[in-house]
Length: 375
Image (tube, rainbow, N blue to C red; front, side, top):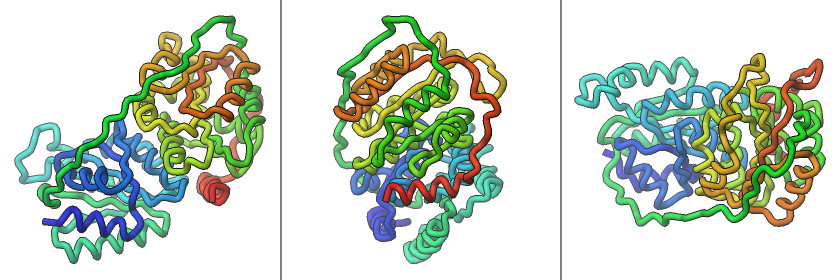
């Protein structure tokens, strides 16, 4: 059995001091250590945890994700379509619930059989974490080499691997919405391309723009391809969690997240996590055209959702319904001066720019130049 505190200190010695995850009884002692001794963001789900940790990595931190193996299925999308193409390395610890021969709950039976197969299919290097301290230390050194080579590495953790680590008293923060504005006028429904022009026009040399997957990122690329832009590819719904990780770890940078209705609906639990950790240097803009524009224009259910009220109820400091590009420009300029976690909602028209191309810069190149810009 590993001494959790000593193991955690070895992780810290190697530079791993930022954690995000979702609880698991097999990992509870390592989770307790990360809360007690490091920076830890409790995610709404495992996919969000991967995106949060990835954002922290962009900000210069060596990041760890913690999850039950059932949650490994929840983060297949970001691991394969965010971390793989962008070459973002994370150190992962995934429990082996449902291990063959272990008496466990029925819902873990199948996952216990296929956990390591899933890691193999995702081309992620992994090892069973040894309960022997000297061997585990050697394994960490090996894992660190893969991380430094821009490759993720996961440890599969069996029951009883870590000894007891008591959780210190956690401070429970309370955040309330301070400003909210709702619909008061006719929606002018600007095009997404024109909207992105406005957002990009207020960008400065301490601002990072993160555009959600699909045509939002592709149009931003055509508006202005610059080192402080990130264009998501895949990992739908993860853009604000990625923004949270960056904003939380780099408070000297303004992070503007450009989201879509289909994307936000897919991982709406991220609003509660963003609100709890409350990075004042993060602006979350939702462009709602009520369709999945990149896949043929099928309807979303956003027409039936009051995103402004939801963001306010979750605890965003400010939550605004705006009706046109003039109001958008004014809101962004106000935020640049006053800061505070802010949600801006704007309805836009359906459709996209004619003959829309795709970025000619690869995701890994986007990551590298963004890190260079941040440094």
